[in-house]
Image (cartoon, rainbow, N blue to C red):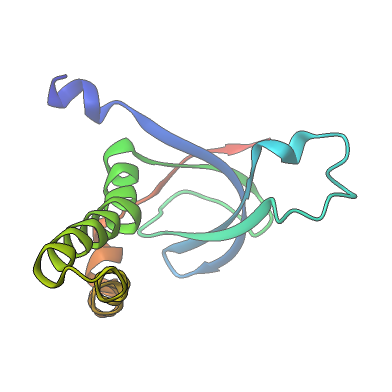
Length: 145
């Protein structure tokens, strides 16, 4: 797939403007699982809703708190987030698990080592949070009526 075609793919979410801080708009988005549309979702105890706040920087349009908007980002950012949050830690765990099993031949040490590798990984991720945050940019496509 060409770079031009992949850059056209967007991830869109509707949300509500919760705050405006200068040129930064904070949009609240409620992610719902597939069962959220079920007729029994009011009585179900599953935690199927997740509220997120998205920061849209350098927005020059006119929106007000409470406006319904559509927030968009490139699909590449979603893939990057998936890689950093799930795929890379999984690969690290598997690599350490296999390596420690071969070296020590003791499953309990290999298992503990594999899980322990996540501690420094997530510490580094937390330390780089601001740098990573800057690489994820969102925009508002339109104000929804």
